[in-house]
Length: 290
Length: 288
Image: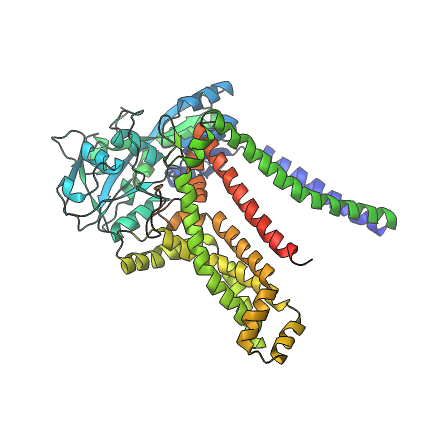
């Protein structure tokens, strides 16, 4: 008899666990937000503020990368996908096949600063020069007016929307399907902080980081899209009035037209308060509805 | 009642035993399913022997040779550092150290295994990188050597603990016989003990290598991840594991890039499988 009771206890516990998880699912209409690692802190800040204002709302923000978020959206395991790059045609097809009407919302802007070691005499570079440096055609600083020193190129790794944006808009100068590639010798670092640390340590480096990460340990360069200027340094103001050329939109994707709490959250994000949070998180607010 | 209970427990244990194998088989098939899909787009030669890894290009270039060599050079470097250190440590713990010190040392080495790899990566990035950079006058401290040193520290606990077991399981009479014939303690160690424990030592080394080649986080933080064909150990390299970890998050599901990463995982799986096979053969082959 004793043994039977043991089994009974095990079954009872299992049953309770099942019921518990079922109840949890039923009770929480949690909005799942997933995607870009660049945006995860921003999303978290929005979610916290939104939940403070709407105590009944429940949001969960996770990272993993833009691709992860978009895949989750297509599979129906998240409500909002955060992305620091556009959805690719292949992903649009998959979403359509899964029966989604995906909507895209621009929620903030991220400006990328080109950074070098503080001892580097270079002050400005054109897109042509940047493209040459990052594709490996220009390998010495003296080719762009600097010291006679080999250039050490740093980039984020391919899991980063930043990597893709810089590739398409600077290396390929806006021609998204262009043949340019990062030089094989480019160091691919796993985080923006790693790029800042390496640039601060090594004299011959060049890298790019989100504006919010710029610190006094590194020097930012003014850049120009054309060969004869104007050269613009990275700043929030310059990114907002669109004179700074390396700024990209940060996006939300939803599987269908937003409703209920998702819609309320989106409205909050686009409100003055939501855009104020963008600024405190060191990104660039959308500014005038353009 | 008792018979029924025995039956249930026996079958449960049996099922658990098979479950492990089932998982390995399932993982392998899952990897193979998505990995082999790559070869609809790319030939096996281009994949295995291509020297350019540009999965975001149009069309994608997915030559894994630089990544394979990157993994190889980091692993070799780590092995060269870890084997002498680990072997010396194991011999000291197993043969020379007095009993009280033996227990402390063993616990210490095992503690080393408990350090998470991201912590090793972090320490390597802030402390080891600058040292390597200044020592060799390099433009950056993120090189294959930096990764090798960090990985050596992660392989040493595995190597020491298995080697020490092998050395202390050598029958006492071997040692006593050798000493009785007039050999010194050192002669006994390297002419009798080590050859007698050789199968265990080979297994220890192979398992250490297996640990190193599969390591991801520390290498990703320390080796610079540049997908060049490595010419020296003092240059940045990109390993297979770091490539998968770094690129999986952002890839488009069902794209050639996605399949290429699975194919890369398959290659890694096959390599570690063979390393474990060799270790196993070494361990059991000689004990008959």
